[in-house]
Image 1: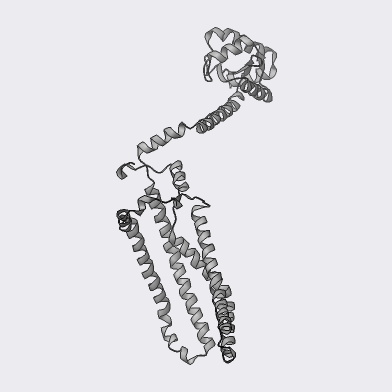
Image 2: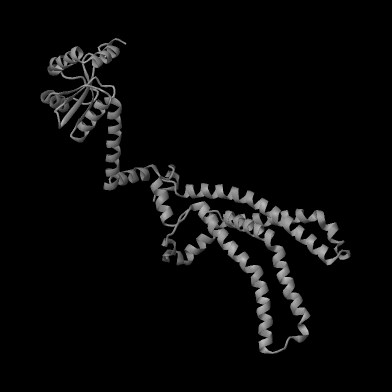
Amino acid sequence: MADKSEQTEQPTPKRLEDARNKGNVMKSREVNTTFGLIAIFIYLSFNIEKIGNTVEGNMVYFLSNASSIQLTKAGAINVLYGLLYSVFYAILPVILIIFLASVASNIAQIGFLLTFEPLIPDFGKISPISGIQRFFSFQSVNELLKSLVKFFVVVLVAYFSVIGYLHKLYTLQYATAEADIIFIMQLISKVFFNIIAVMVVLSVIDYFIQKWQHTKSLMMSKQEVKDEMRQYEGNPQVKGKLRKMQREISRRKILKEVKNAHVVITNPTHFAVALKYENKKHKAPVVVAKGADEMAFLIKKIAAAHDIPIIENKYIARSLYEICEPGDFIPDTLYKAVAEILAHLYSTNLKFKKIWSMNTNG
């Protein structure tokens, strides 16, 4: 493992992917908390009246029928079932919403990830010394400080949300029970909304802090980056992909260069060489593209599509293919033979004559 002072390079995609496969991902707990609070607030906004009516109905029923309830085991169980129903009706949807909100927030932050590696026991963590070190680690202290800050911020928000309504709270004893309940519910909603607004801000800040810390924990040294690149490039699958990319790049280059050629000389089936000659720029014809077998077929196909003359000459085609690379001038030994081909086309092919004139004189 490289020294921390040497880890100056950003983590590579492979480093990030390996960490993700091990369950080491960037995640903010504050975002999860905020998701849950927002989901609960939305749910209660639409269902609080219905929940209240159900709880109220059950309470009225039990109080109205208290004298008729038999103090037996069966009667006590019926009362217990009724109370549990009221409690679960109010609480169970909230529990489910918190669970779904937690799942949604995790997916929003890290995407879908299924890994069992974090569940594998790490006996090194069982050591009391390691446990004490983790307890007093920077991360633990940081989490403790964040929790304290969050607690005091929430308390302050709740305090300043309620302080302006204290005078009205003193007058609730003179209002009707219905008016009291409506006022209290509105005040709770206001406090809850303000807390959520502050939590949104805190979660955004914490998200970027966690992202920075996660990236910092995965920083690499220059040597680690080099070693990874060597290992990556040595992978047969990667080499295959690189070769495929190189062939595709070569193919695209041929597509572009052959369109500007003056003539294509072929074997006729195994080799094809595309030539271009501009007497104001070039001292001799230039090889702009060459290919064998499938590539030769492709060159001829492009030439035919753009009405570029295709001349069959086995000796010249094979010689140019073996001697020259794209961008090279043709050798002096073949200059006379190629010049004769160009002169013949100039005298017999009107379209070639027009293109030749444009490229050499224009």
